[in-house]
Image 1 (tube, one colour):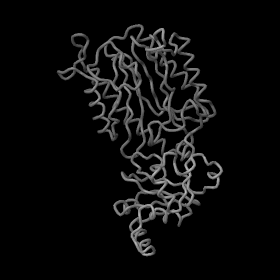
Image 2 (cartoon, one colour):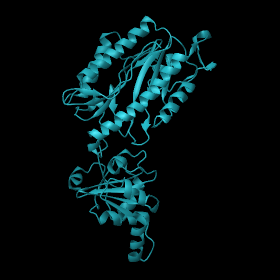
Image 3 (cartoon, helix red, strand yellow):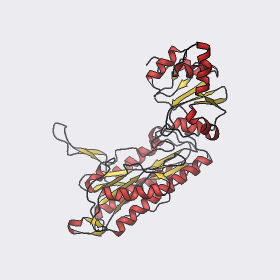
Image 4 (cartoon, one colour):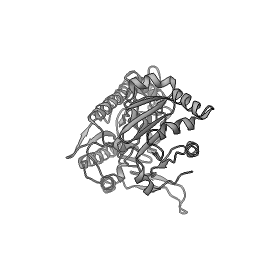
Length: 394
């Protein structure tokens, strides 16, 4: 990159923060401006003043909706610059003029700021300074305001509507030959149940993930397997839903594990131990606690109860095999991104942060179990934003 990735002394001198991105998936931009736009635009925060540079297409809407101090017309600024230059300016020159006029000649930018754009701006006298890759460009996103908690609770309710529909369909299904589930006169597949779930989420005001997890039996031993093909009775089925609320952009995230029919003793024990692991993690949540310590405690609890984290079926030469036990994080940050900073296992928990708590156990030959809920960290503990029941047998 044309700029120095870890120029820490320069970062201390920087007084401005610059974002150039769209805000539909650009969480930093949406958080900074409150303005939803599908195309990239410019945001500058400098000397306590916030401003955005918008095209004519978005200008009027931006003035109504953006939570910034100033909204500038890109076309008007371009026309003014053209008069002084005697030629039509490039988009980078227009952006540079906007930044220089507001004290943004050496702004901090996100670590993933586009390389080509950084080079173009440098030619126009703008030296961007990327934050460290392990940093967070807008650390204020970590601590949710009361309004953000309300919006995240709403996103969770939308997610729960999808889970409720999954339960309804599974409960209404019939156990057919070879334990294959049938619903509405046809084989009930993971794909068909996913459609029912995501249609419900859409009706409830959410944007479906499109890859909600409906994984049955052995498929559930891979935590991110979407699931495919016929669903079967008497097998563990992981349902993991993570839609985005269409009005706010905040995510919900919820996982339940069920059996349509009768669970075996081995399935029931796996499910119960996993639930106890989640309760252990939830009971440890409070401001000041180390998330990595909680993760280690949950991992050890599972091992002590007969489910160590290990690779099984490994050949004598060390090849082959697959992971068994608990081999992903205890949870992750949640907000305008599905997985947002801080990472739970590396975090010193703070009041106002929101995490999913989702330990899982995956035993090849038996199946997988995951329980996931959304928790707001408080000074003395936590508050669950999710309230969906946890049935085992349906």
